[in-house]
Amino acid sequence: MTTSATQGPAERAAALLLAARRARRPIEALPDDCRPATLVEGYLAQDAFVALSGGAVAGFKIGATSAKAQAFLGIDAPFAGCVLKDDLHDSPAVLAAARFPFRLIEPEFAFRLGRDLAPRANGYTPEEVAAAVAELHPAIELVTSGLQDWRRQGVASLIADNGVNAALILGPACADWRELDLPRHEVTLRVNGEPAGTGVGGNALGGPLTALAWLVDHRARRGQGVAAGQVVTTGVVTEFVELDAGDEAVADFGPLGEVRLAFTA
Image (cartoon, rainbow, N blue to C red; front, side, top):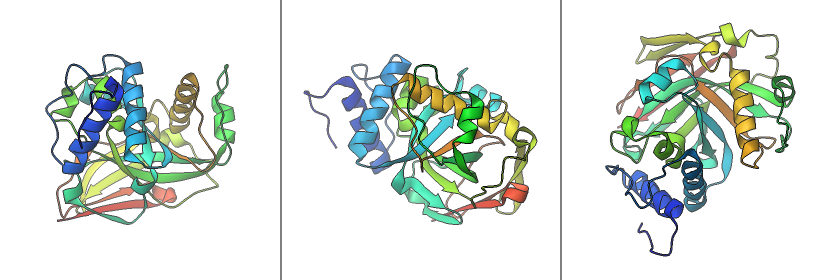
């Protein structure tokens, strides 16, 4: 994939990042003439990335909702990305390791909306957002990037790279979740049968519903909404672990069920 002199900076950045991912050859950094310098420029490049991919948007991810994730990336606020339809999988999922430059996994709580939340000037209260949810899913987000040393590229470049989302694996749907204490809900992660991390829902911005409300407000500020049927995954709640070819991860959400992801060689 090549870039054209007639493209704007956002389109050039998107073309380079998408090509790097597809070739599984991350680039050192975006060139100065198209590297986003602000969050606004990063999201414009993300819009171009999604459009150039040709994929339908099945939902959204929120990155850096936990203190650990923010420290890992050297940032102090969440950011958003899109989940494309072809990258949304049901558990148990088996993916080809060679498709991804690297494979970082994150156990997360994901919500599927039952009705549209159109953008509006005053935003939505957390209660209104919760009322629009149809189902809760235990989930694993797969993170990868078209950028080398991606942790030190700056948040605007990570946003341009579709928020470094590669895939989302959903566990069983739960419609009867409203009585659960999600901020205190425990999650454990195992890799190849060995313990790899624990956490609670409150690690995601104080609670998954708070994170969901952040995403809805973020979309509204950009004049965009979240549609019925779309999924929002709300950020890592345990440690995040990089997997190799042949590895299998299981995220156990207790009464909500398990999510399984394995990588072939």
